[in-house]
Length: 150
Length: 272
Image 1 (cartoon, rainbow over the protein chains, first blue to last red):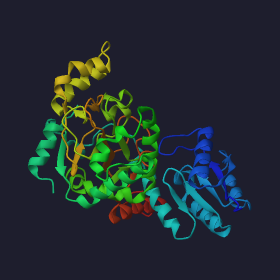
Image 2: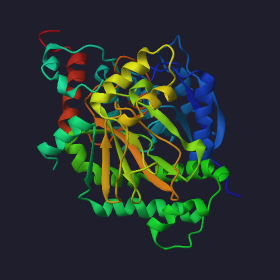
Image 3: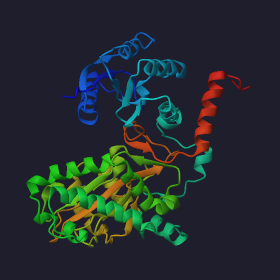
Image 4: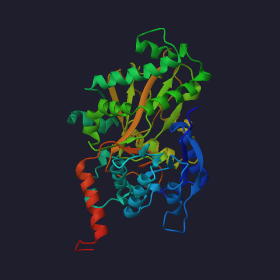
């Protein structure tokens, strides 16, 4: 019988575009994705150390021999600093580990996948994450009562 | 192309119905939905429209929700379906929204079988649930939809102002009471297969129990300009990556955002 690949869940308690998912919810989402979508065996999710800045849990999972890969809620669960992400990508390629991102339904298996993932970091820019409440002078020129729907 | 007359219609009515110039994509959408539905519930008719209209003969009300959820899962598993959906409505989106687009992550399938009281969606505006006023709903019927309870209802921007006021200010009235009070201000839309309905979800809309003898099957999905605001007034999950997915990202958008990021990091800009 073919052995099922094992994927670990990875939990990071930082906001993903404003929303912090509690660890139990992240664990459940990772588990569901691993078993249903990846047809894999679930390896208990681990919490990143919220006090360190060295991504120790993520790096440790990458060195875990029994794993095919790691499942994360989003690409934004990866380190915010590009240099740190590049280190993580390097390790994942070195240890031949896959990354699977639930919300984006994307993966990183090879070097060529890195640019697909990095392209998504545009959308972590404050332009996309800041709440809009007021119009600036430029935007106010478009205000016209004829277009008021409320 | 969306012409000025159509833009004015949209301004006045909050919606627009137009024949899609990409009938091939529409037919493929219809084919795919037919295949997945008829695989679960064998069809006696090869005529897709007839099969959809009579779906209630193959399925019980009790089975309906699971049937719908399974179909939605299969639709959303198919990446090509998203492109077909966008292509079929591209002309309208180009004219009303833009050509650099964020698309709702999940395409929805609506199955309204006759006399089903559990699939009702009372009058509502999507902005109440934190959605962006910059978005539109693209609603695609997979068969001819009659101007009756077979369809969805919508009001117009002018009456929407009064209804919105009643909903947000009233301390005594319920949604259903407000709907009944303004019932005459709503209309059911007739849409044929091959046409696309696009509407601003700021405008109150919904559906009632389908009292016709035919099932209605339609798809809906939200679109917005990629570079327009997502969280307006409240911070919710109606953003990337939770609710929207970038569908078309132009090269200059990538260059521009990368430029800002690089300048900030390297701090070589004189004003920093």
